[in-house]
Image (cartoon, rainbow, N blue to C red; front, side):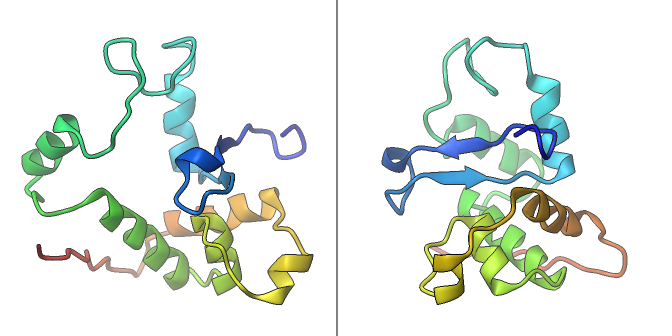
Length: 141
């Protein structure tokens, strides 16, 4: 997207829970990680043994969370943390829904599409952590 100076990732409908395409908006920190991976593989951002990673709940994820002392944290807990930080940063419910890929039933979202440049700015709000504390939500079971 030349107008915002970066590309976006589109999750195809068959790979997204809502069975519709979803545009993933990355903040600057996440974008810099993606940029550092460019050109390491011709087709995939984070390959494993030159093949695509097909599952997020794999041995690498399980080993990483044990290594940092958070063996109960699930991949979905990271999504909850992102949503919580967006809310704490003052991002509206409608914009949080767009960033998280929720299908929202609000009429304004039906008539007005989100502006990618604006969503990037909103996603960047969570990078300012001054004066905040994160409470990690872990679900038992």
